[in-house]
Length: 91
Image (cartoon, one colour):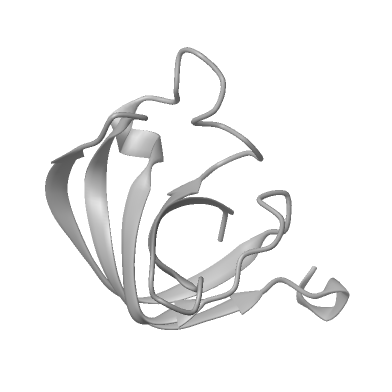
């Protein structure tokens, strides 16, 4: 689980590539979290992200992969099979 930082969207405006970060707005602030706290999520199916302060659960295959981006660097990447908003019942 974590918070999304959208990086790429499809033609419908759904996020297909985003960082999953440990706290809301993490990559907006300087400095960003260290690479071992960031996961690059690839989700070709796409997800509408209207609010980066909404926590997500993401499941899929996690791998060690160094990714550099203008916003931050990540030490992990995840090919997401399922992404959903965290609900009160999850807590």
